[in-house]
Length: 243
Image (tube, rainbow, N blue to C red; front, side, top):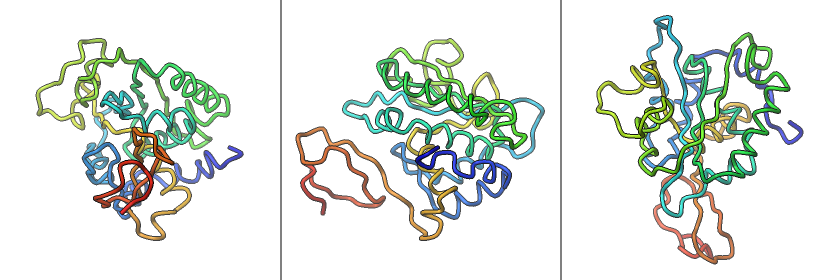
């Protein structure tokens, strides 16, 4: 919190479901998982009228693509941003809980994430009456077994349910029948971590920017971690300069 995490979080939660989703839509924030789908539109697919059953947010942090490690850096160095984003987006979807599905090989990262989760619960920021808002929201951390296929959104759901991580036939789509058959949205770590910058700091909403996308360059360049503005189509592979 000393470095700005959880800043005015209660005020954001109390602004309500419609405000959260509309702000994300207005920002034109694109998903950072690779497809670049409009985040606000995707998150609005969850039915707005509750049927009395719980709904869930699932965060894909399996990150099994060869050479991919950008989500690892977020969980290692800034886990509270991920948890904070889960709360804000969870409220926007009327979700009762978030499940973070983390790659089994990320031993140190899951320790960092568990420690941050414990701190958040200890401060009353998660759980019952999260951040004093009157909204109950839990975050669960699930460790995968390093199966590549579990990076697919419905295979994650199967694994979370204790089944073999195999993709489901669609439809039905997770937004209507996801985890345990309940309404679910599957998203990614980076989008969760940056959405709080948009909401609380208003960095993109003010300037109408779409933000950037984190990349890790697997080479011995001068700088190995980069964030590129969305839409950039060329950059130097060694990290010496961008075009």
